[in-house]
Image 1 (tube, helix red, strand yellow):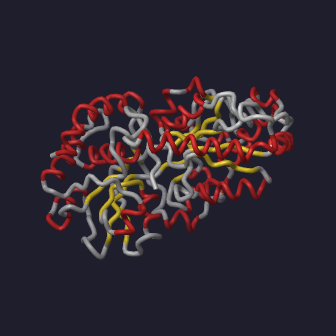
Image 2 (tube, rainbow, N blue to C red):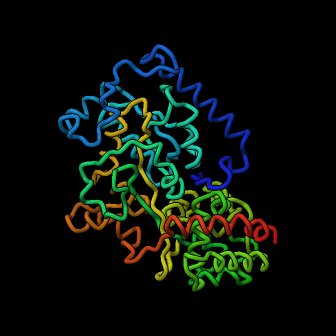
Image 3 (tube, helix red, strand yellow):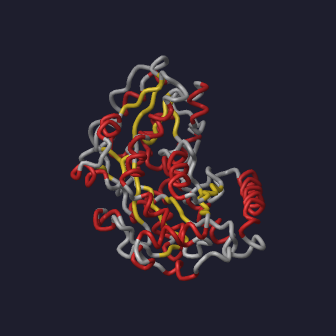
Length: 387
C-alpha cells in the first residue's frame, strides 16, 4: 500500500505500469457507467448544472436538497483512496450505505499529482474524478482546478486548516513514527538509535522523498529530531546520509507487503500506517517520540469540472461529519476537527487513546519551506540513497 505525493516526477518511476492501470480503470468505469449516460465523454442527464456553482448546502435549500440532488446523480468518482489508508475503505462503504450512491474508486494508488493529471486528462468525461485527497504541496499549487465549497462544519475548522474561499480543506494528519518488528530489533527510543548495529540493513522509508509525501515528511521529522529547523532540511538529509553510511538504510520502498514478509523490519512512516501494519505482522510495534512531532495534513477538494457536482459536495459534508472524522481516528490518523470533537464530546475516546492522544504541538512545513526542501532534495537525495 502506498499513497504518494509526486512533487518533481509525476510518474514515480513506474510510468508505463501506472499509465496502463489508469487507462484500464478508465475503460472499466466507462463500461460500468453506460446505464447512466449515452457515451463515456458525456455527462449524465440527471445532473443539475446549477450544482456545479453551489458554494454551500444553502444553495440547495439545505442538506435535504443537497442529498436529493446527489441521489439523482447516483454516483461519485473518487481517486487515490486506498482501502487500507486511514480507513478510506470503511468510509467509502459508509457513504454508499448511507445515501445509496455508488462510489467508483479510481486508481487507489495514484499520487496527488496524478490525481490532478487525471482530472485534466478526463475533463468533460463521466469518469473524471469528482473529488481529491491531496498532499499540501499539490493542493496549494493547483487551486485553479478546485471549486469553492464550505461545508456545514466550516466555522468549526481551524483557520489555518482551510483555504479562505473553501478551495481546499485539511481533513486528517498523522505524525511521523518508527514502526519496528519487535521480534527482530529492540524498541528504539530515539531516531539516533537507528544508527546502531542492531538496525543493520533494516531501516526503510515509504517511498522516495523527492516524490512521496510520507518519505518527504520523514526527512522533515529527522530534521527536527536532529535539532534543525524546517527552513533547512539539510540536517535531516545528513541523518539519512549517516544511516546509509552505517549500512542501516534500506532503499526498498516499505509497504504493508514488505512489512508482512519481513523485508522491511523498521519503517519510518506515518503513525496510522505503522499502526495498520500490525494487521500484517502482529510483532510490528509503533513508537511516536514525545518531542518535535512532524505532521502534514491531507486536503479535500472538489474538481471544478466534477461530472457529479452535487455528489462531490455531499461527499465533502460526509467527510467533515463526526462519524467520518472518528473513522480517521480509528485508523490512527488525527482528524482536523479532533480538538473541537474533544470539546463537544463527539470524539471516539477509545480511538483517541489507541492513537496515543492528540499531540500538543504538531509542526509542519509551510509552502515556502516545502519548495525549498524539494529543491534541496532534488540536488542531494540521489547521492544519499546511493551511498
